[in-house]
Length: 148
Image (cartoon, rainbow, N blue to C red):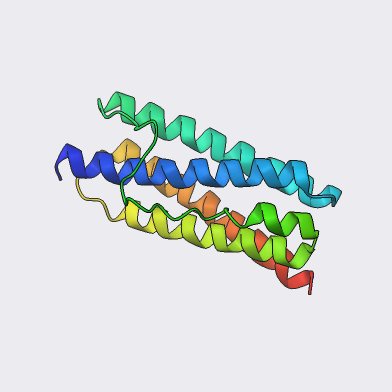
């Protein structure tokens, strides 16, 4: 795989992580339920950590994270509707939107795991992060289902 394709794939993953991190950080400050505040705080911190890990790996490979990506031109903003929902304070809707964001993150990791010619250290990192994202997705889904 050429470096350009690899960089584009990793930048797409970074954008998805940044989107999730911003979404959870915003949700954390706006939501009233103490349990959700803690969960959103945990996932905002997780995404922040994932961004740092991924950027570190990219620098080791002499790939440079883009500051503001326009890879797909219309990058899907997974958590964009969260702010509006939170003002409505509907727990089920907030959790459904978080799960939708997690669906998008899972797809981004599935795509990244299919990238060819990735160094094994980076591949291991992506696999580890993908497992964390899947766990987040499952937790959001379980919380959503229990909030009906």
